[in-house]
Each structure stands twice: as structure tokens, then as C-alpha cells.
Length: 369
Ligand SMILES: *Cc1c(COP(=O)(O)O)cnc(C)c1O
Image (tube, rainbow, N blue to C red):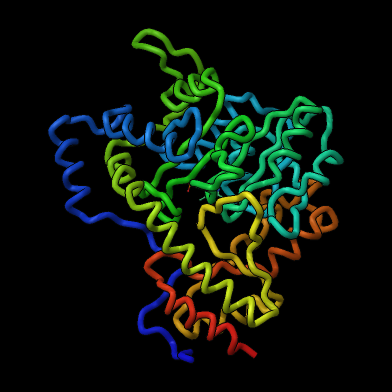
């Protein structure tokens, strides 16, 4: 057993990077074409490949995930109130606020950590127009139950799939559920373009509206058809994406090996709740989140061993100063989310970590009194 501190710090993730020479070949193309943005050839190629990888009928690339989420809400005309999960990154809730939509916080399922469909109906009012779920850590929401409620009440369904690049349910891409799914291609995400994002939609009319909205609403030289924004991904980011996408399958395979070690070793230790294994689901391998009542002590202890974990998602977005006054932010409305937020810890999780280092981290966890 080796529980001596690591010589170099171990972080929760590390971006996948191609050989520099591979990226340089793309840069040479860009320099030759003198096209840096506005939907150039790299953008076109990546958009097609991302849609294919996600097995989504349509994808639109974005400058980041947050703008893609805001544009999804605008494209689908979400107004009034939207039922959403507080167990997420602040961007999910902020996107609603930027659209002038009031977030209505709903508690989460204690196993999947995604919005609890049994708690949604009680929160619907005459102002409700949509449900915004989050595929937390790449674990899918209860998509069928959510769609059933949405259909009954005529609501839109939008998913924040920032963690779910490549998640599949029964061989269906995660982006084919609901009206739109946003993805983040931030450097911390499994697939990244340094900064970037995408929106997957099934309806070609929605895709057309999304593409107008991300380019200022400009239809042609003479016509501006709607109040759009600048959400375009540059050619430099798209080129990086083309290189990183080639490496994603291998990265997922290596992360699955790390997950295997974590599951076996931590399962044997006991006292730790492991991420769920759901039948028919292919996980994205974005994060490996455990739960333990000793969370804060464990985090401090691991830090002393040069292992830097993250408490995603603590605090809940409903606890932020800007959302605490929302009536549904009350602790009594969100008991499961509060409990989970106090226990969750994301362990280092990336291919280069390797199975031996993962085993060593498990030994450290086992050592904590
Ligand atoms: C990373 C992340 C975002 C934000 O994506 P950006 O590309 O950084 O704008 C949104 N939601 C969740 C759940 C995330 O993890």
C-alpha cells in the first residue's frame, strides 16, 4: 500500500490535447484560407462530426455552453417560469435569469442526482413554459418521465448536457431527447475546444432559428430577422475540436478503466456511495463523483497528499445570494439536493491518471479514520 503524498499535484481533470504538430497542420490551413471565423471550413467539418458523434439529427456549434443554453431558451421561446434543478453549475440557472425567466427549483433523485420527475408536477403553475434538466456527471435525467409530464402540460424540455457528451440511452444519443440539449466544450470537459459548446436539436426549423440567433439574427446582407447574439465558434477552436474529437473514444476507454479501479476498491472499503450504473446507459465518463458523510475531512486529507478533489455541486445554485430569495430555494423544498451537496466529492478522473494512481488514491481514502 502506498499512501505517501504525490510528488506533483493531481487535479480533478486534465484536458485532452493532441500532438502540437497535428494542430499546426490545421493552423496552416487556416492561415492559407485567411478565414478565422463566421462558419469557415473547420467549423463546418466539426459541426458535422459533432452531430454524427452525438447521433443527433442537428447540431450547432457555439462559443461556449452557456450561450448555447441561452440561445436554446430564446429559440424555443421559453418565458415566465421554468422548472429546474439546483444541483448544477451556476450557468444553468443564470441562463434562465438572462432570459428573464424565473427559475423554479425542484428537488433531485437521490440515486441519479438529476431532477426528480415525481416532484415536477407540484411546481407547475400557469406561468410554467419549460423544464430544464441537467444530465449531472453524464448520468441522464429521467427523460421518458419528464417528456410525459411536458406533453401533458404543453411544456418545452431543455437539457443541460454539459457533462453528457457521448452519453447514450438504449443506443440513442442523449441529444435526441427533449427539444434541445446544450453541451459545453470548455477545457475541463471530456470533449473540448478550449472554450466552446454546441446545441443538439431534432427539429430542422429549430436548428434554423438557432443558427440565426447565434449570428446576430442576420439572414443576409439586407435582412436582420430577430434580436440575435454573437455565439459563433472560431476556426481556431473548431480546428482544436477536430483534433480532440479523434482522441475522445480512447480517452473514454481509459477513463472507464480508472472508474473500474475506483468502483472495485472503494466498493470494498464501504462507507462510500458510488455513482450509479444504469441499465441501458452508456456513460460519458465526465466525472467520478462519490458521496460520503466525511466529505470535507476527506477533501482536506487528500489535499495534504497533493490530491485536489472538487465539491461539485456545492453550494447549490439556489443558495447563491442572487437566488436565495426565490420561494422554491427553501431547504424544505430541496431536502435531497441539500443532503447530496453536503456529501458529494469528485475524484481525479482523466485517462492519464492511470489505474495505479487511482488505486493509490483509493488507499489514501481507506486510510482516513
Ligand atoms: C461547464 C458547465 C456549463 C458551462 O459551460 P461553458 O462552456 O463553460 O459556458 C454549464 N452547465 C454545466 C452543468 C457545466 O458543467
